[in-house]
Image (tube, rainbow, N blue to C red; front, side):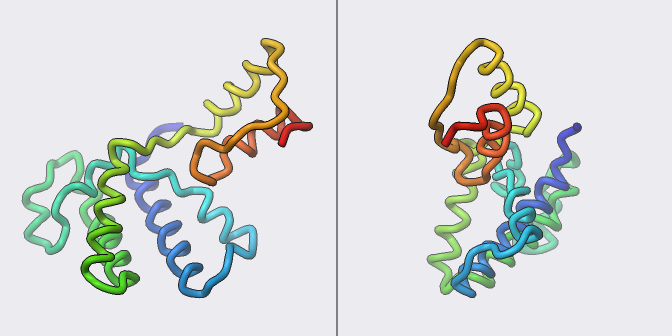
Length: 152
C-alpha cells in the first residue's frame, strides 16, 4: 500500500469534521460508518503542509511543488476548525496543537501492527493486557485481539 498524503489529509479532515460534530451534538459515534470515518484518522505526522500559511489563495505561491496538491485541503482544514471554534484564541490553540503533532504524531499501518503481534506470538510472548498506543484509534486493539484472543 503506497502512502497517499492527499488521501490521508482527506481522511483526517473527514474524521475531524465528524469529531467536532459529535462534540456539538454531545454524543459518541453511533454506527459503523461513523466509527470507520474516525478510524481513518492518521494524524498529521508527515503532513508538514499544515505548518504553512493557507489563509488565502495568494499563500499558495509560497508552497513547494511537492506540497501544492495539499493547499486546498489545508485551507479546508483551517476553515473547518475556525468554524467550530468559539473564538480566535480557541482556533489558535487547535491549530497549534495540530502543528505540534507534525513532529510527534505518527501513523502505524495495520500490516505493521499485524506483523508485530504475530511476531510476538511466534516468539512465545503471551500478552494478557495491553494499552492502545494510538490515542484510541483502535488499530493495535484490532490486531492484538485477533492474535491474543484472551487479552484485555
